[in-house]
Image 1 (cartoon, rainbow, N blue to C red):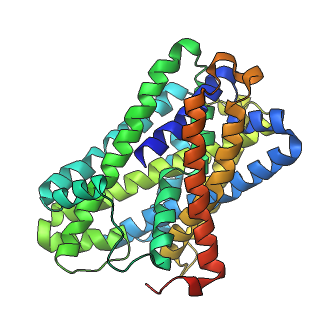
Image 2: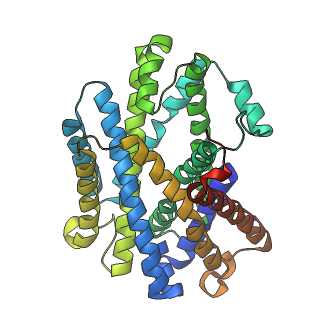
Length: 366
């Protein structure tokens, strides 16, 4: 996923710098209201459902240490609102970077685990199908991983960030480096999580969510690791919730023609901040519904994001070949070969998942 993660996000960096506008606004401009409304509707629905999963993760983590969701979820919601409504892009960005750096904790715990590194690197160089073969569960898992690593909201979020920061052509190489480092950091952290999970796999201990994993690691690696994993789980959820809701607010503001910038205080961009606050409050409220199937929602939403990703990237690829719009930043021939290959892989994966759902007899159980 590393090259896909980089090249997909590099496309929106170029598009944002060339146009000075967010992805939603450019789609409306170049493809018309029909495609614009369809894309915006898709984005807002998936973003909101994904936001619910982030609050679900916060609820799971705190409930594990005895803090009920009725306390932890509202506190998290208030914190997310306070961080964003300050009217300073730079202040928000510094806070986001600090939270990102906390994810170094995954790497530290993986090093402590001292297990599975050889298998991870051999699997990276020579990928193999698991012993059970291609099952419905395996396809579901692959799409969930793709959907959470390269989600549609990331395209809207990154391009809106570029536009809000008012980056210019001279900033392109620096932004490419920034995007590359971010992609590497994301994938390295994912590998670290696999190594941590492998500790329980080696001991034959099952778990179905990160909170259960954290508790099960305690007797093996110490309570410090339990609390560390729970803290990292909350940190990831807070980062995700903040970025997802901002992506929705930016996109909605762009399409509606409202002021939509973190550079502006709330009184100058009331609609933008209202969308952000409303999304946070509504998602937090849904998570507090008793007996909600939170783990199923988390996996299902990631799969939905994976299914929607090809259409979002196809529009992006078409825009990147619009020389009238991008000028010298338009795709080169090698860009097109690479990007269409990525799109083809995603379409195939989405198609396989659709067949699995509609015709499950084609896949063995597992």
